[in-house]
Length: 142
Image: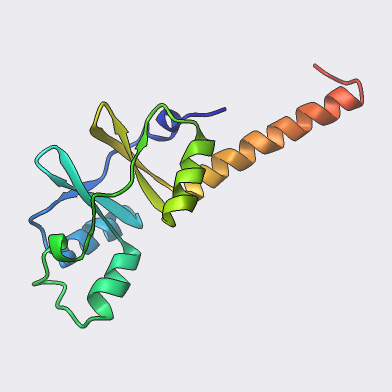
């Protein structure tokens, strides 16, 4: 079973708590990401996602250039440890009803996993298991 550490081998994207919604949206757009961790110093204080933009900024008529992230981010997000199996991550996402989950290592931000990332790994693992079972049943185990 794969762990989140294998998914977190790419750049760690984050913005600072003092930035505006517009700055965060531009940052996310440039990197083609749907959510970003919000840090205050080295401490994870929130997560800001596309849903936050729609529900907490646009729908309320706030000015993205004047609205600080701290007013519209999801504070104190649920996190998952970098050593956790993908299945644990999927369960946490289901329970928390979220599509992006910050990954931490020793209390520090190590990355972000999306539901799409986790489901892709889970599907790959399931497909591999099915192939192995079929090979075993048909006596063609390598």
